[in-house]
Length: 356
Image (cartoon, rainbow, N blue to C red):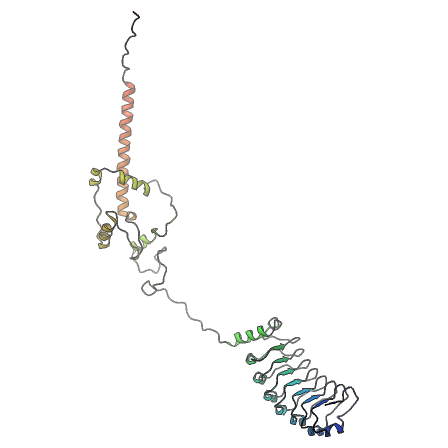
């Protein structure tokens, strides 16, 4: 290796270009304004440091060397050689702090490149060809990049990406500040096709939609059920009890009806006209319930007690009126008996026995 750094060389010394077996050459911090074509003689050179000089460009003969590390930072480079893709063994390229406005397409041919430093240049676009490289570190901070290409999501080996001080709009700067994971997640989500919007499904019947919830209230709108089923569906079932409702003066209390039904005599029950159920389901339900009204299904499946049917309510109301009339007649007889007892003269009392 040869270290010629921190001198005032205006060009590469000619003697250094004759060291055929030289593997490393450092010309850091000199005053180089050009690189001699004789440097192509160094066919064993793998590490070249040309940083902190005044080079306006790099000669194309550099691309004929087996370089693995090339440092040309802090110069005045406005462009890179077009045949830079010939550096097939190049693993690290540092061209930061220059005046680059664009990268040549040959950069996409650097199949061994792992580290690319483009910091502090004037780049406005990043070439899509970089997405084909096995990059591990990418630094393009302090440039004029507006968008990161979507194809960069294919940089599977990338571990570090620096995007500071760029007028980024895609992804937004807030996303880029969060780091590599959020940037790649944004690129992946944006590249996925948007889901096709489908029209909302039409209202299906119970036969076509068996998972439709049953037992709720049915308003009758867009329904194929009969009116009686909708009426019975509004009532509560054994599984879902409804809150207590307020009874009107003319309505009967179900608990009181049960009490009246149990207190009727045999004669009154015989006088009550039986209510016939024309449906075969009603007859089977009466046999199963032991003489009481059979459950009625508002959709053929839900169970509702038979005493909720309108014709049975009329019978119960009639029973209640009879019971009230019977009670009133008993009260009248009791009142008349009390009045008669009050009007009757008191029974004569026996005179006290005289003393002997």
